[in-house]
Every structure is written in C-alpha cells, then in structure tokens.
Length: 560
Image 1: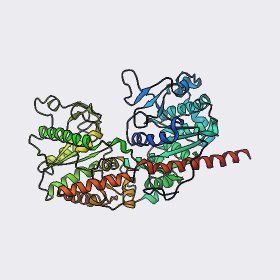
Image 2: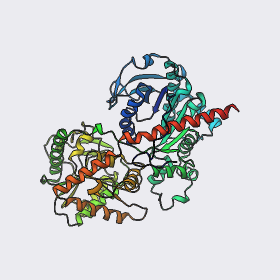
Image 3: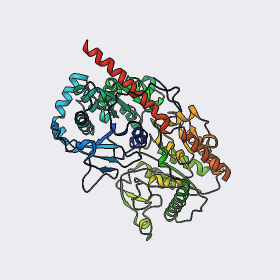
Image 4: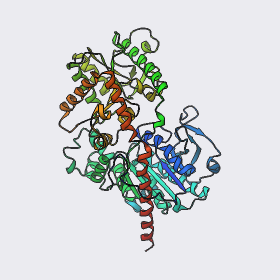
C-alpha cells in the first residue's frame, strides 16, 4: 500500500486506456451532507478534463418539485437520451443532467423506491454469493442498499445504452452506503472493474461516537467483536465485504488505511488523499469585499447577542463541520476558549461554532433587529436546546464565568447556505471574514475543513488525529507562520494538554503583527497549493490501473 505524500513519488502506471465509462456513485452526489460532497464536487473538474463525458456521477433522486436540488441542472437529452430508456428491474426511474459545480460533470439521479420490496431477496443472494450478513440491519441500512443496487442496475443499462463493452466499465462506489451496489454489479456484470473507497470505517466512527478510547487500545480491537457489541453487524459486514471484493480498495488517508486494515481486516491498495479545487477561492478583489461584508455581519450579530460592541480588530476564531461533539472536537474547542479567557490575551476574541444542529427558527430579535434575543449565545432556536451538547456547554461556561469577558462564543446552529435567516452568507463566502480556524478533531479520517481554511489563506489549527493533519506534518513545517498550519497532539488521555497547546497557539496568533498575519496567510496558500487535485488525482489514476489489473486476474481465475 502506497502512503500519501504531497505529490506521487513517481509517475503511476499509465491510466487504463480501456475506460469507456467511469461511474462514481455516492449518496452525496448533488446532495450536500458532509465531507464526501466536498471530495466529489472538488474532484469533478480534474476528472472531467481527463475523461470528458465518459465520466458520470450517480446520486439519489430524493428531490421533489417543492424541494429541488440546488446543484442539479436537468437535461433530458444527455447520454443519448438515457432518461427516456425503460429500466424494467424494480421500476427504476432516472433523471439526467449536469452537476452545477466546476467542470459541470454529467449526473444521473436515481429513483430507487421500487427496490425496497425485493431487498430481502437481494440480501439473501448477497449472503450466498459474498457472505454479507444483513440479518441485523436497521436504520438507514435498507435505504443505502436500495439506492446502491438501483445505481448498479443503472450502470449496467447505461453501458448497454451507450454501447460500452462491460470490460470498459469502471464503477467507483463511496462509503458503506454504496457497498451493496458494488457487490450487486460484481454479481451481474463481473467484467466491470470496481473500486470502493472508505472515507471513515463505520465501526471506527461508532467506537469513537460511543465514547470508547480508539487509540490507547487500538491494537486490541477486533472489528467483528465491536460490531456485535455496538449493534453494527450489518453495516460492518457490508463494508468489510465490499472492501475485500472490490478490484481496488482505497482509503482517504494513512490514518484511515491503518484503521481499515485493523477493523475491516483488509488493507487498501492505494491511499487517495482528498485534494481541493482552487476555483472555489474568490479573486483578490472579491475576497476583500467578502471579508469586509462578513466581518461586519458577524460583529453586528455578536454585538446584538452580547449587548456590547465588538471592535474591528476583534480576533474571530471559528470551527465548523458535522455536529459530532466529541469526534469533531467541539468539546475541546469550547474548553480551549475557556483557556483563552484565562490567558494574557488583551484584545477581544469572538469564537464561532458554525455547526448544524436540530435548528428551529432564526431569533426574531436578530432577524428583525427588534426586541431582545432569546439568549446571548445562539443565533437560532433549537428543537432540543436542553439536550444539545454545544448549547449546554456554552451555557455552563458562561454561568461559571469561564468565558464572556474578553472571550465570547456564538453558536450558529445551521447550514450556511446563504438563506439561514440571520447570517445569510454561504460558508465559502463567510470564510474570508475569519482570522484563524480551529478543528481539534478526535476522529477525522481526512479533514476538509482545515484544508478549505488554508485554501482561503486562513491559518488553521488541527490535530494529528486527522488525515490532513498527518499529511501536513509529513510534508510541511508544523508552524502557523511557515505553513499556515499548526498540528496539535491528541490522545485518549491528553485532553487538558491539547487545550493548553491550542490556546497557546491562539495567543501567539492574537499577537501577530500585520506583517506576520500576511506571512501566515501566504504560507497557508502555499501549503494548500500542494493539495491541489492536479497532484492528488494521480493516486486515483493509479487506483484505476490497479482495478483493471486485478479485474483481469480475477476473470482469468474464474475461467479455470
């Protein structure tokens, strides 16, 4: 297994010229949920340049006339009018179009409801052929399986419709949610080359999400045993089987590759680190305008909530990402803010938690600028404010006087899509307003948020428990001034020390001169340039070549 580096150590094997159709299936195609959306949407342009309209993304059609995907532009004539083709299996319906992102790749959205009545039969077939144990399935297992099986069938029909021979079909499946589709395609079209990428093992995430120490006892964990203990048997069985059966299995970081080898008992053939598309970053003139607009809006919101004015030189610190209190280090971020309050920082500090929660409504006092806010730390009300871990911790820290003087924290518990009712600025347009970001993750297979931050010239602090953090340490100086990145150490037993290390770094950032701030921004840009997809895409080309070679070996063995 090749480890990740800032660039491939050598030119990988020439891309398989026999690729006639390259499909990539994910629940997050035209469906913005988390980091996988960012992986696919930023990777698409460079893949499109290489493969043109041989590339097709496949995602779930979970949309309606009242709730349309903002990222999908329908075009019925695409792919030789494939949308008009009848797919008799399970009455599958498709819509064809373009993904409204750089590169504008072709997309097929799949309506998969008709698969549900036959799932138990399919589960039986996959048990007999591959040993996948779906007996203990629950939750979103059936939904993921129905979608991915439908996607596999669509791949078959698309190849037939376009006249592409099965051996020229390469099908890439992302995360456990698409594993059943990979196995179904292997069963029905064995000539196709298949790839499977884990962005985080389901059992590894579950271990951490249940508060168990992943790192101190890592060598002692058994994936199958933990799956039984945590009621994850079906997902774990599907994921580990897809990893074994794929012609090429990849992971997004050395960290995740090690986790997969231990918990899935299968080592990835290639590590495919996540790059970033620089086209998402605005030009200098627009950047300055966005910074001015964003800071004015954020400081105005904070001033209204806190009942005081925040000056223009307030240091704005932010964290963001999925709302996983422990895994994403939201707990450590808040406790680090308390450490900062104890420190010698002289200027005002505004800490922002930009993390979606079970949001209800915008605070009327902030939206209409009339009346008093419902509380002094949150922009929107929550359906479960009394149980939300972030809200509870901020309230406790304020009540104990550990924040609220020089350091103040504001929780923005919604997706920043530009239409939240309070901030009304999208996340990427708001990033220029931030001075420094902190992502103190405990469990982070890659870590797009710190990479996005430095791509926008904003220095970041992350941890060595993120794939990006490990990549940064491996390839760059661990320094805000020299690389725009500081990587803090996290273990199962150094929580307080990690908070102290991060707060000390933030104190140094707060004391930077204007010249040093520009130096750190320049260093951040330079580090981000080395994570451009034009470098990291080479690992995918290697994965395609490996998939072709292993597929050929598999087919030859089957003939004996």
